[in-house]
Length: 287
Image (cartoon, rainbow, N blue to C red; front, side, top):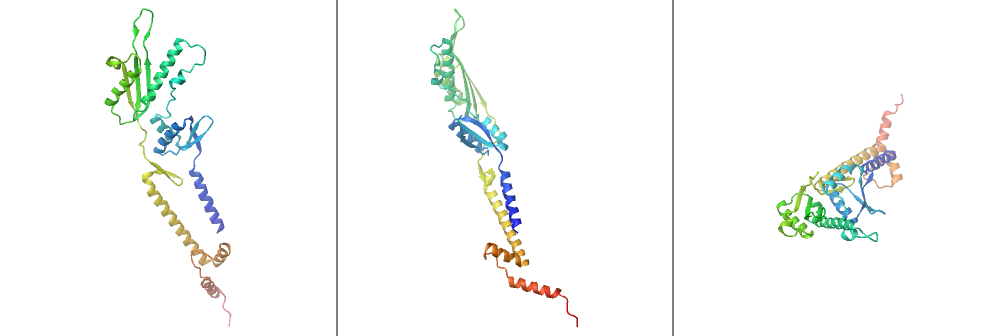
C-alpha cells in the first residue's frame, strides 16, 4: 500500500514537471514600457511571458515551445518598436567643431525621429517611418531643390485611410521647413500598409499547468473537478474492498495513521467470516 501511494505521488510530480517547458529569453535590453506593451500583446495571444531586470535593461522570457507563436505575434504588432532618438540626443556634440554636413544630417535625423514618434501616437498605428528631404542646391548656379517628405505607416485594421492621410500630410508639412501651404502638402507622399494578424486577439487564462482561452476555463475546471472526484471515489472504493478482505491491512492503517478511517470496518465480522472459512476447509475427524 505505501508503495502504491509513493508511485502515484511520483507520477503526479512527473506530469507537473513535464507540463513546465524550458524558459528562454525572447528579447533583452528593453525599456520597461516597451516590455509591458509586449507582455500585453503576448498574453492576448496565449503566450505566458515573464519580465526580469538585467544590467542591459529588461529581458522578456517565454517557454521554448512558444517561441514561434510569440515571434509571429510581436511581428504582427510591430514590436519591439525601433529606438527613436530625440533632438537632444542627436545634436549632442562629441567634438569641438562640427561640419555643416554633420549638422545637416543630425537635423534631418532628429526631425524624422520626432515625426515618427508623433505618428505612432495615432490609434491602430504600430510603426511609422518618415524620410525628409530639405532644400538643397545641388551645384552652384543650379536652382534649389524644394523640400519633400515620404511617410510610411503600418497599422492594424480598422483604420479610415481617407481620414488619416490628410491629417498626416498636414502634420508633416507643418513640421518641415518649406512645406507650408497647399503646395507643400502636395509634396508629402503617404503610404499606408495594413498588418496581417496571424491570430485573433483573444483573452487567455491559466488553469493549473494549462494555458487556455478564458471562455474555455470554466469547462476545463469542471472537467478537472469531475475527474478528480471520480478518481477519489475509485480510490475509496478500492480501499474499502482491501480493508474488508484484509483485516491485517486495516489494523496496520489504524496503527500507522490512527483510528480515523473514511468508513467503518467491521473486524469482528471479517474475523468471523475467516473462522467459518477455516472451519469449512479443515479436515473432519474420522469416526
